[in-house]
Amino acid sequence: MPKRADYISWDEYFMGVAMLSGMRSKDPNTQVGACIVSSDNKILSMGYNGFPIGCSDDDFPWEREGEALDTKYLYTTHSELNAILNYRGGSLDGATLYVSLFPCNECAKAIIQAGIKQIVYDCDKYADTASVLASKRMLTTAGVKFRKYERTGRKISLEL
Ligand SMILES: Nc1nc(=O)n([C@H]2C[C@H](O)[C@@H](COP(=O)(O)O)O2)cc1CO
Ligand SMILES: [Zn+2]
Image (cartoon, rainbow, N blue to C red; front, side, top):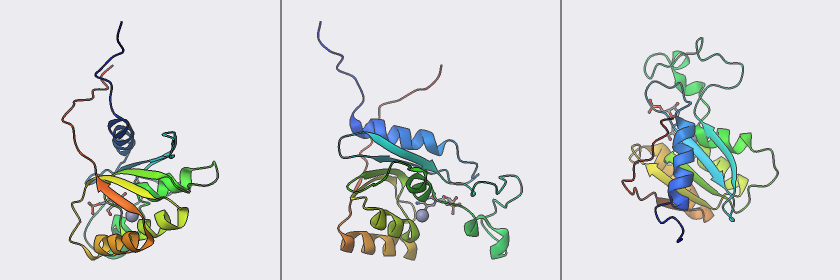
């Protein structure tokens, strides 16, 4: 009997895990998920965007606009940083980051400093912002490769 032919690819698997992780986010506007993978295809860590541990999802603001202190932006940890910080195994040198939204400049710094060498991203909806332009400049200069995830159109259902 031949092996199954319709199994998911590595890219579908890791981006799928990143997106599943993003589904844990409480952010009402943008849910982001990240998955860090070793060069031999082992999942090392995952993360999603949210407030730091101990900072209640119910007490801190989810607003996008208003006084800076009353918006989420000063308080959220991005999925990529959470994935880096969640890793307890040692070095991330040479790893690949799968992320559902292109990393900002602050996460780019953490990615570079952690030794992550590739990024596979899905959405790039903030491509025109200074944050993402600065991010791409740093990543390119530091030799971190990035490529857009190629959607296959395959429906992956988790209905149980
Ligand atoms: N790469 C990213 N990873 C992230 O985890 N985030 C988080 C921060 C916020 O919680 C949310 C963005 O909110 P909004 O401005 O689209 O309503 O996504 C944002 C970016 C964008 O650079
Ligand atoms: Zn970020």
